[in-house]
Length: 246
Image (tube, rainbow, N blue to C red; front, side, top):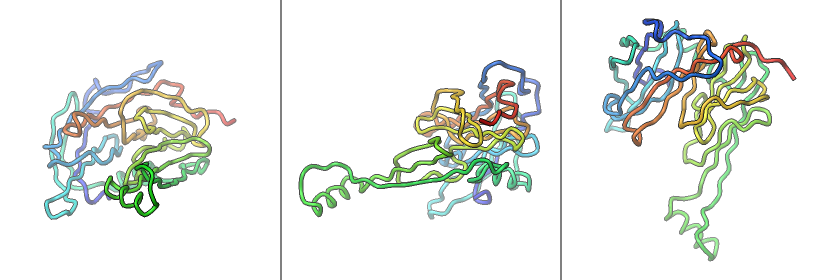
C-alpha cells in the first residue's frame, strides 16, 4: 500500500507554533489544507508519523484504472513541507504498528465482522425482490470493527474499512488506542477496549498517534471531498500516561 501513494512530509518540529504544549483538554490545531486537485483528483489515504515528522499519504487513480504515485510540495501554516521519494523504513514500521489488529503489548485484539441485508423494496416474491434490490444498488454491506466488547467503527458500504483507516494504536508504553466511530467522532480507550472517552466531535478519519505519545493527527474531508484538512490533536497529560488496568 505504501509504495502506491504520494507522500508529503510536514516537518512538525520546524517551528515553535507546532510544539505540543501542556493542556488540560484535547486541543486541535490545523496544520495543512490540501485540495483534491493537488492530489490529482485523489484522496488522502493515510497519516503516518516517522522520525518526528507527519507523512500525509495520498492516492489517485489514473485513467487506466491503475493507482499512481505523485509528489507535491504544499505550503502549510507554520509547517515546512518537503518532498519524499518514498516511505522510509521507520515509516513502514510505524504503519505496521499503527494498523495491526493486535496492540503492541498484545493486550487488545481487533476483530471484524460483516453482514448483508437486502433493502426493503416492497412486497413480492424473493426473486422479484432480488431483482428490485439489484436495480436499486444491490444488497447493503454492514462492516463492524470491535475491540473486546467495544465497537470501534461501523458503517454500511461496499468497501470494508482497511486496517488502520479508523484506528491507531498508541506507543506501547501508553497501552491505548485512538479511533473514530461511524459518525466521525474521535475517541481514546485502553488497549483492551475499556474506559472509552470522546475527545472531539466532528467528521474525522485516519487517526495517527505520534511516536512520542503526545498528539494524534487526524484528517477531515471537506467540501464533498474537494479539500482535506490535516490537524494535530494535542493530548492532555492524563492521556499521555499508561492507564490503570481494571
